[in-house]
Image 1: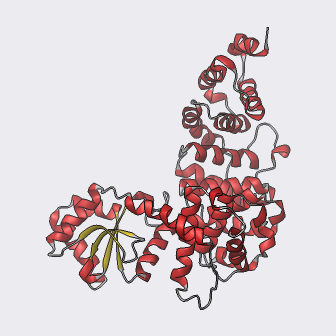
Image 2 (image 1 turned 90 degrees about the vertical axis):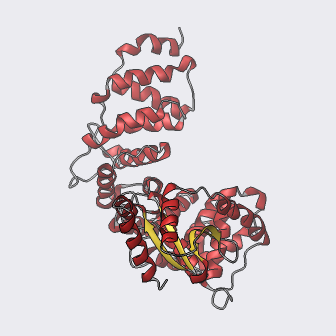
Image 3 (image 1 turned 180 degrees about the horizontal axis):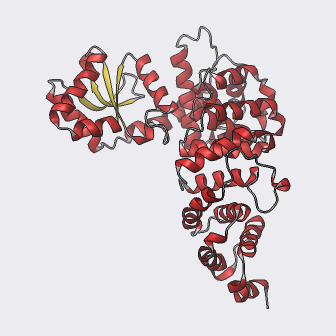
Amino acid sequence: MDLEATTKRLLATFQIQNLSNFAWSCAVLKYKPRDDLLGLVADRMEQKVDEFYPQALTNTLWAYTVLKHPRAQRLAEILAPVILSKLPEPDKELMQAESATGGEFSTQTVSNALWTLSSLGVHPGYELLDRLAIFVVKSSQNFKAQELSNSVWAFAQFAHHPGNEALRTFERSLLERREEYTTQALANTTIGLSVFGGSEDDGLNKLFNDVTPSWFRLSECNSQDLSNITWAIASVGAFQSDLYKAAVRELFRRDSMDFQLEGLKMLFHARLMQHDFDPERETVDVVYPDWVAELGRSAWLQQTEDTRVSTFQKEVLETVKSLGHEPYMEELTDDGLLSMDICLKDKRVAIECDGPSHFYTNLTEGLTQKTKLRDKALAVRGWKVVTVPYFEWQVEWGAGAVSAKSYIEKKLQAVGA
């Protein structure tokens, strides 16, 4: 009798350790058993949820995620609350996986939990993410470089701000332990940090200006990693760094056909941010390959054409009209590169209706770095930006037309409109 048949026959006797080991082994071997045996294993796991311990939890989630099994999402939703219940107190340090005993949480289990949940798009709740961020800060010296990279990437995927101390920890580890990072880990760490704009006091900008380009091994990067690194540097304004110049030079050695749509869009945005920073190239004499302007522009413009109008946007538009203005919806800036939710052409005012995606999920009033870059780009083009956060609008609109009109009127008066 083969191993799969034996496993199926004895499955009802398997304990959590057996079930987790079986799934983990399949993932390591990149092997998918016949007759959806992994589905049967998942059934058994769901019956024994309360018996899970940290290593079995994260190994199981990792295995089903790597294998892209259809039950991965459901398992993650079931096991995420269990992870929180099993976490040690914040004052307890984590150890490396090989040092952890008794099924305790290790740096590897924390990293795996963050990576798998973010890969599956299963938000485990703010409390769990905040507590995991504490462990990163307290035990960073025990985390491997890959584990730190996975962690900051996961926080970025969730748009969950891990706190300034955690961001400083990620930056410091990158500087002090750079030789331990693979090129992909370097790229994931920099793009993860750039989602938050780095730590306070321009920490990420300083990092990019301080490092020697050779540390990033740009020639070894694949096309997407190179796009990520270039965009990350540009997003914090480190245009005068040697690293930025080296990253753009590396693009001349690449075939444009190696870059996917997302990578092309990021490179075009980086080039655009440089132009906005120094239009006459007086302080930043960096030139991109011609294909970035050609192919990147095409990729970039696709997002300006995706102009789905929300109910929120329509409500604000009608309110602006009721104040006697003549607003336009989804207009482009003069160069045709940026789309505005609503604008008053005669007053050069751009009104942006910012929904949840424009804020960090755990900081209600914390505009994302990408949103700040949008506002900065509009301002450079001569537009006064009025932001209407969704949570403020819900209150004002819910209070009635008079309240909504007063709210918008004050917003417009604040920019002289």
